[in-house]
Image 1 (tube, rainbow, N blue to C red):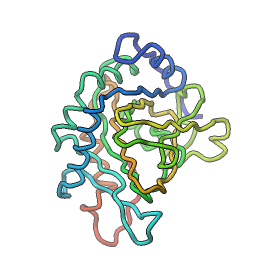
Image 2 (image 1 turned 135 degrees about the vertical axis):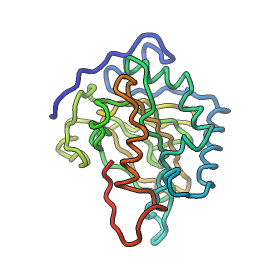
Image 3 (image 1 turned 60 degrees about the horizontal axis):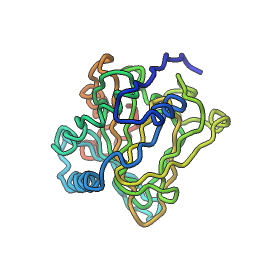
Image 4 (image 1 turned 180 degrees about the vertical axis):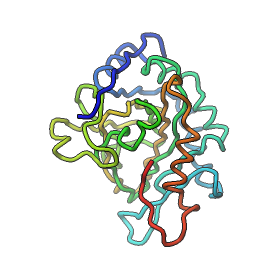
Length: 264
């Protein structure tokens, strides 16, 4: 295991129950059911449709596509990132006092947004191998993060809901940066499927191993991910996306024939 971190203890005061805070302290993740109302969840779904319909313009929100596993030769939208600065609804959501307060409760102090993305997992969209988010070079920005997974569409085992582990909370990397966790590294962990309904929020820290399966159903499984770090560790959102745009640009900004490898 790599260097370990002194983990913060969740605060008692906040939107999350004492039981939810205790589960997070023990495992590094917790599912807050019905965090957003059906009306709020419907608005988030509508805003997501607006993002998809928006023109792809260099320098603005970042759209990525992938090869469909269901239809040969078809490219499907995989994710959109860095959209909050260009959409008032999502910007208001990021600044929602309930969400920020819940993340601050888990992190033990005031927080700031690090990154925003929506994983679409369209029909034929691939899954993700087991990994820790901190493996993706995040330590150059801050020592720990908490992500709020906001469910847009019902996420099930069939369409690739997130899988977490039943392990005690980790305080460091168990693998190498930029590499998925191997079967050997995951041998002592048991992955648990965590289905979610629209409006549910699943909070997890950047050392919590997680994975998901491909979506081989006929319907999309859209998930919003808002990742925060402690304000005391600095505001790195603009730098993160500048680094990502330079190293792994969105499809509309890519040079024809050039191969790109995800690095940040």
